[in-house]
Image (cartoon, rainbow over all chains, first blue to last red; front, side, top):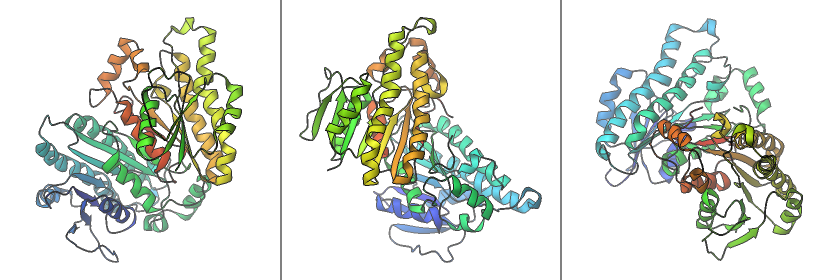
Length: 243
Length: 231
């Protein structure tokens, strides 16, 4: 895909990731749409969109995967799982999967993708070498009923700063978005009903955000945000979490 | 054509914000008390010569300005004087310009924005809100402005009005030049890029919040500080 900026979007088949694909495609990006399951997704392969079927819980294979994908200018770490289990009901498998997909996989992706960004840009090139956007959640800042989900989303805030500090001097922006309730399968299926109702009580507009609204924030960070904006976490919560 | 009222537009971040809105096709009402270093010229630009310490005149002023789609509360003042030797006049001026005037402007604009069920307000805070500041009252007013941002978002959000803030870190403006060298050195040690922010960069963030950011983003503070203070 020469001449085009390329964005790798994880968890692209549905929900927020699916909306991010449209938003970035609208900005002229070619898209590498990664997901472990495209069942029921309306994403279609085209000259400017490639489907990448990969289960991110296989963190050991990520370096080889990235090497096979070619040029990546923007990485959107969107894939995430929310088992929606109370702490005493958590199985080891559910915990390991949440840690792998939500935390270890994005770290491994940033590590490997940033390496090619820096190589392409040159160690002392001016301007932007690449942009990385991580999807955190208000869960990072509140007592969350799904303990491991909250832990991994807080971890994303932490590594967003770590990588911004490490990669910023080399021209890479690493920022994060922390959404409140967004109208997705995850909100409908995973979030416990009483927690959802309690959250909605605190939202000023009394509605869940749309995936498109969140995708616009991701698009801005991936395309337009000033280069000085680095290590930031943008809250998209409509009042449900004021920090 | 949408209309933006930008305070403190005579220089620094305010001037660059005026430039950014003009570039995006807006009509800009540029408010300041001093236009001596203001060099913008545009058919869609109108100067509003006003000293925001005159709080009582703000409501009548707003009544004269007509429809405002976006308010940018950027005007701010700073003195770097020792904690125990801040003249009362300076304290009063900082409170008026940095806090009471932005509130008076939001208050005066709220009825027309509510009637239209639309409007955006962007308040310019500072990283000083989180870190404290050698100018005690500057830090205090910036922290208060971020708090007020949430209160007004809560109050006006139901009517489709967005009230958000930016909190810039060290930015190359005339105000920055006033800072003690020790404070400049401190922030330079912590920023990822090793440089201060350009006012144009803060202006880009303000333009987005003031024109295009999604409506679900309300009552929030966007840190434009490049690691000067990761909170």
